[in-house]
Amino acid sequence: MQSTKQAIFKLGDESYGLDIMNINSIEKPVPIEKVANSPANMKGMIWLRGDKLPVYSLRKKFGLEEKQADEDTRFMVTNSNGITIAYEVDKMEEITAFEGEDILDVPPLVKNKDTSYMKAVIKSNDRLFILMEIDGILSEDEQSRIKAMLV
Image (cartoon, rainbow, N blue to C red; front, side, top):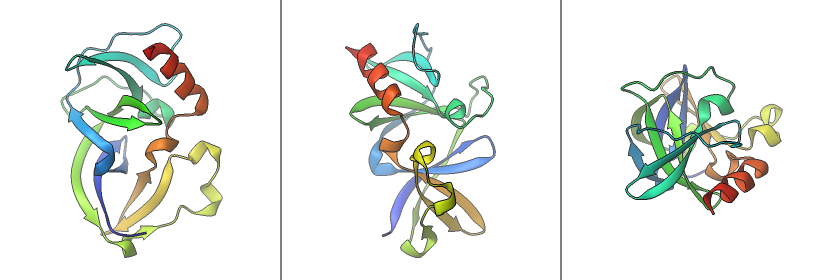
């Protein structure tokens, strides 16, 4: 894999990266409106600059206990599978570039349909980061249910 610039964020104690070319903006939390019958990992909808966006909890996706938003919580607004969506993360850490030699393939042992969000692993300065595949985060069911809510 060639060099890449990643937005590094935290969920619990783990660090993840998302290619900055996939991020429209990084926002402080705003009030979330609950939506009945939404996918389990969806927290609700927000209004951002006149647009209604679904808010998706990556904590829930990864089986972490939910926590109240605090001063570090951020929404990463991105486009995933044709849906403009806000992914809630615990903390944005940095934007950093990684060289090809730091980027490793996802080990075959952990590759399956439930880990389709994993694009690669980065080992840099004795730290590990999971690079996210933007179109692998939402399941097909989540995609269709969210799209139906946005109509």
